Image (cartoon, rainbow, N blue to C red):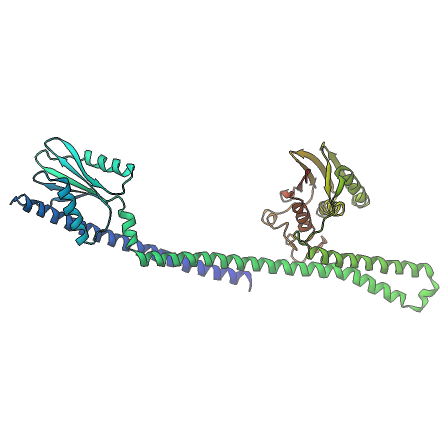
Length: 424
């Protein structure tokens, strides 16, 4: 599956999912508004009936026009002609709400125009904030001094309406699960695509790496098969040495692939011995002296750490430094300049390897420590390697509870910084 097909599939899937989500939001909103309207209508009817019952109890034959007023979404006021007993009002409200299937907590207040005060009847499960809100609403009303009012407040109206929308909440939850599954699926597809690209790049590189020594061995063997070569012992010896060197090179490449490809920090067997890191760095620099001389470059060491004794596996720590120095040299075009520095950092020693090479593109930096990953170069194989060295570095450093990071800018070089605990 090529990149264009994957992008098309993802685009269509995202477009479809957005359409489903938008439709769901539209219908949920409409359903909520419908439930809210039905609730408001039932409350209006219930409060109107309560008003009529109070008039009948008080034997008041007057007619109140539109006695119920909705002040806010969950607060209602009702005009009456006379004072009313709080407990009578509470009983009438409870009974009327139950008949209308309004099973919700509420608070009521009664306003007495003669004393210009609010008389509380009862409240159920209201926090202080809700009580203050209710009193504030009531005090801020422009009361008619010739009339009496009572107010009804529903503190949990929103949750009550949502509880009546079970099927919509269920369907929204299903869509949420679909979104999570969709995101996971897309992530898996992209990861598999990236792994496929890495695999192809690895196969191309390993083929190129093996092809050179095999071709050299083949050509040398053809020369040795010539009957006249026996009369030229020096030439015979040279070609035999070439075969031996290329065979060792091939063997080392195979061993490196097999060992690093199966490297698992949970199964690592590390030896612990006292290591002088400054001495180890100095020796590592010397081992690359000949290569740097051939390339016209130099390695500079600034060993500033005061504490540089580390307990660990000398072979693995040496290989870690060699990998970083080797990378710094390989990815520097001409006249490579490599700087190695050490610094104290709390209970850690910080070792940095800086080069003046081509740098690492920003989009590749987050994958640079992945196994088999190499910065994409198409079919160009001017820089040898299998994409295993930095993964090896990360595995060894983290096995000692250390850390490694990359600081790089394209065409301006790179710095790899490793931190190793000194009290391990």
